[in-house]
Length: 115
Length: 115
Image (tube, rainbow over all chains, first blue to last red; front, side):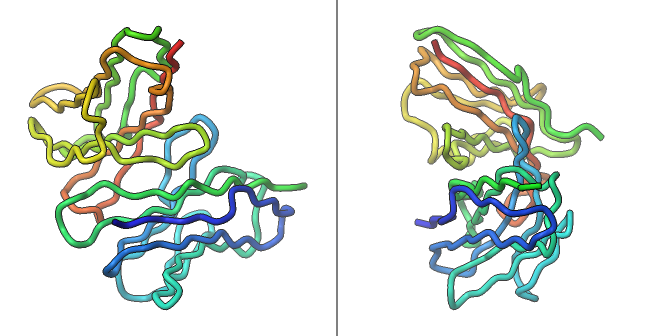
């Protein structure tokens, strides 16, 4: 069964500093990988996704993520965070083998931005 | 183009009552997913439906929970005889085709509180 691990429950970053959120997955084949952001009381918004091809993917709001097969990782990065980036971030895996279509989510990383 | 709509946004029920959560997918989408988010947890897949069909209910509790997506009208997630452990945020997502590589668009969620 596939699983997603986000090892950092909370991360605090100063405004303007760089950010990296970690995500590791367990899956037998090449996964479909996603990063979502959730603001308080809101639904999830897709930041970016990886299916195949270039392992460095660009998303919205200045975010990017890199797929590293050897490390089973898909870490999210941003060179300079803004106060509005404070939110909950979820990494998710989709099943590429046909059949199940629901996504498997990590537990999330709560991002706090210090002024 | 309206996004995924969910209502009610907040629902309070006493133990033993029924809860009905509604989801209207994005225009043109005929694939609906339901997820549950417990406090401090990521989203857990419950069920995947297409119009008039349940495709995958592997994440749905075996008792008290049911889902439907009729030919006309919204998708309904029904919880009978609610218990305190059902308190959670329930999110609906929709997509325009089958396959987890198709982007799932999330609604704002229904927050269920069981007293």
